[in-house]
Image (cartoon, rainbow, N blue to C red; front, side):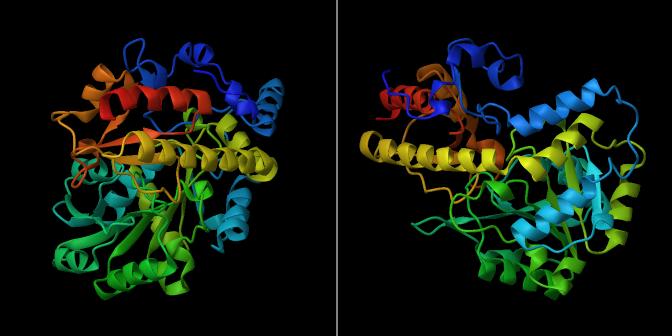
Length: 388
């Protein structure tokens, strides 16, 4: 593998990454190149690292206030307004430990056991898990491949609504297919929610990882839509700090946040102080780092699409508009029931098996291209030997 180093991320060493003790680098056997879980291999933004170190040196690792460190909720509200057009007040921001926690709390807050929750699948697995663990019914409405990308089947979605339907849970930008939904699509979803009086919960965790166009939160459509919506947002994906465990629920109706807090029943905790400090630094001083990352990710995306088209023509993949995840259609190959296991064994590449993402995912794989170009090239070369 010989590539000239043209960017500082190109020099990220596989040897150093493989010594990391985190789950990304320890799930698969030695020798398997892991491009699966949604975290990036890029170095931490200097502003975030400095903020964490300075806070730790200050010696204040005591309990934070329930509303967070000074300036935390203000930083989130300011970023949502300035970056994504969602005007909100700091008092409408609730700190949490993770977006998965927000999914679980919202299901318990806005529905009862036996109620139905609409999901647009294939979808990040914690959505369905949060519904089923709460004793609710997950109703999966498959996104459809229209030849140029994935689209919402609004006819099927409308037909899926019953008298027991209470919620519509959205992932935008969508994980795993990479769609960034348009204003028209969001308006149609909002109209459906209004017709059937559904609570809207939108996971916007990848909002800062839009590669084409601009992210529009569904809650930003109108005050009426915002009144029935909880937006889940945070810095962990875009600024690559998932291990810090920090996220936020945002709602224009404070009563919705109160219901979510009550649904936790004392079992949930706020993010730790270092995670809070990192968030303030990310949203206040790390934008140049994020711009560099986005530019590199766009290059990786185009590189991946070109190599797949040239060397693996039977693999189908649409250009992701957001996220750093490629959704690979491998149904043309005989890879068995567990695609990920087959690729780990035959190609020595670790990916997520599509079946775990629900209806429409069987025969697919999710590949994370947020790594160095040489590592991505090595993974593609290994896949070509099996899928070429």
